[in-house]
Length: 398
Image 1 (cartoon, rainbow, N blue to C red):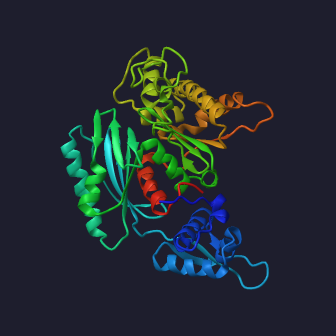
Image 2: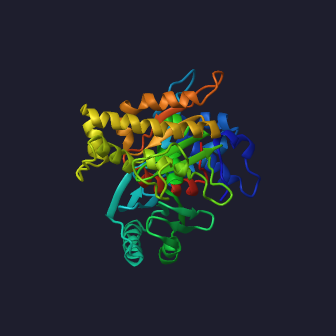
Image 3: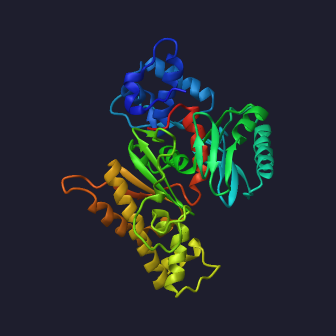
């Protein structure tokens, strides 16, 4: 499907055979990113004819994608009617597979989860297929009249063009065909990508307004490992073979508190992932590991002022910042977004991240913004939904 980006919209006003669909995508994306926005503003910014914009807006309203929300401010004459995306109508089924839990979420255009089913992820592929097909099928049956599509986010290597899951290292799964099973059984279009890329897309759709208007940024997801999604010119950058963004294995220092998933003790993931942070805290307690202390509890302790927890997070932020500094040197992004539960401790880690980021930039250059994700604790769920919307409306960017 052809991808449309707002900054290029004027040059992409389509030729006769595709003009309606492409212009419709342009209008919808302007409403998505710039809402509340008037018909006149859309026409002015896209160079589309006012009559064309009005006809497309009427069509999008009839399809339930956008709605009028009242009148804006007038600089003379009649006050303009403002438009925004219409929420509450299911358009996406997100399938989010993580090492611990799998979530099937029904969502609207705004990324609001209308309903969801959650079950433990199993190493038994037969069980996984059954659970996913059952829950996707239930949502599809409940909303037979909705124009639904499915997005699948996985902690591994995907081939989005082919629509296949290549490999999930945690379980050792290769060539998992769950996407084609869904398509065959329910006739629903399916989009698949790895979790970090999916979260980067979700930042474009549902993130902070600064990020939704940003065309070049790096998203860093701190979880059991570290995932990186790269957005260049409004698109996910995957590299020639689809494995770009595997920066969790970047060297940032020796003697990490835990081994990386690859077995080494010098990778970024081994120093700054959730499991590394928890292990560092146990070490601060003279190795007295406590099974009840997970990343949630550790952050709670730190926010309540417990000294070892505070120092653990600051030390972990140092290694997280080293990796961020390297990515800034390599990509020169407008912004770096930090995602995951670690952002609950933002006030404790922010300064260290910004100091290290600043060291990577020459004095005459502006340091990229280092910002916490606005997607909450489970960004990969919204990531799976974002994949649908990016595909459904032919836009991975703003």
